[in-house]
Image (cartoon, rainbow, N blue to C red):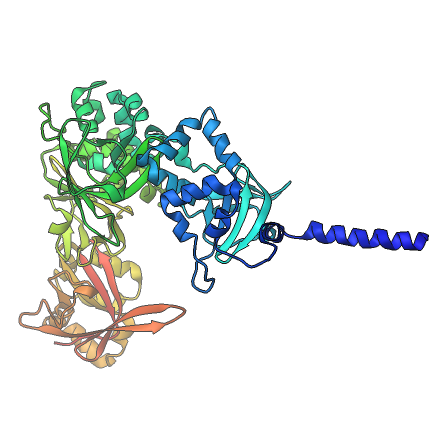
Length: 611
């Protein structure tokens, strides 16, 4: 009898364990239909009364169709963290969330907000509960969800509850006990502007104009200029009084009453809070937002949602056509440097008393073109180099004046390949052949064409260090002793190559000279006229980096040119690499190119050229 009871208890335990281990989807489907065939996510949710609020919202936003795919081989897979009706009820009755819920459910202006809130509950792949791990995962709305598994599975602050692991043909559903709120649900337009470093000037302008409360309390669409847009427009907030009517007018010209998301922006006139209208032009574009305001300002990022509206980021400040007060104050080169937070190190260096002569140059009428290194560019030099520059004002002045050239040259005005003389007298190599502008072969203009009253500023990603002249570089290299000896035997040639400009030098190494029979070389070195002709045949009076070499190069020998054959090849060496092969007069090879000097460029060659 005891053995019989033990067997019954054992079988009962096995049955209980089997039911306890049955996953949520099987229990759910067995409970609902008595079978385990799967349906789409939308179909399963529609059949569960506790998801009726979620289902109605999916239908309202059109997301039900995206989640109704029934063919697994064709459909994308999703994980939906599905709030029950009680979760939405809690949102509707919450002290801090009821207004948001009312807007989402009753105001058509908030349809995009509702859609994005729902997408915040969806992940673009199917994840069973057993595969959920601690960490962040991106939602289809774009923001991350934080998953934790200690003491049960949580998504942000919501608990995953039964039923979970509800398997559908196009993914899986996990029930949660509260609605997940993306950042826009708790951040208004002012919050977003004040917490995003790209809008720090706009945020300061809103405070100065006294418009904070106005931008918090209504449904609005804001066209938000970036910091760089304010700098380009020459707007200095210090020139405005608190609650200045002009500043208020400018800012209100960027605000549209109501919520206008990207897909609802009309072609044509749109009223703003200033009373003036903007002109919107909408074009379909795969790469860009495709929205242009007043024929020039581009929307570079659309549909940044906030709890009370939407922000579209633009690359220009819009000026009201009926503004009767002063236009934006015109700014000088120094004004821009002083107001731009990205060049604060350059500003601090120019403020040193020992650098007053350099500052005086930039304060003069000019015009000048200034290449302004960012703070990151100076920091890349290292603290020891910066300390050395701070301790050596003369060296610092030499470097800073190397970033200035006389004349006003926008990026479109810069020649394709040229050596331009800087204010400190040394040459700067400019290459504007491609989409951007490259200086000295390795420094990129990252923000071009900041217009000022006395010139133009181009922001660059490296600090330009003035190079040495051609003779100094050849001397320091150590491989050109014979060439320098030969140059010294021709009166005045060394001084010309050190002080003249510009030059392109094809420089034979000592090994190249060793290929000449010793008796022929000795005879050449003793014949001043012949030697001068050979050496001048290795030099051109033009600045010709490798990319600018044509089929022939004119030399300093009258009527004589070097025949050039250049070929570009691609080789695989862990990755595809580009190689330039240059042959001169069909027999001498260029083995190194583009050693830039303050007065030209040097190409190293493996043989001596003869005219």
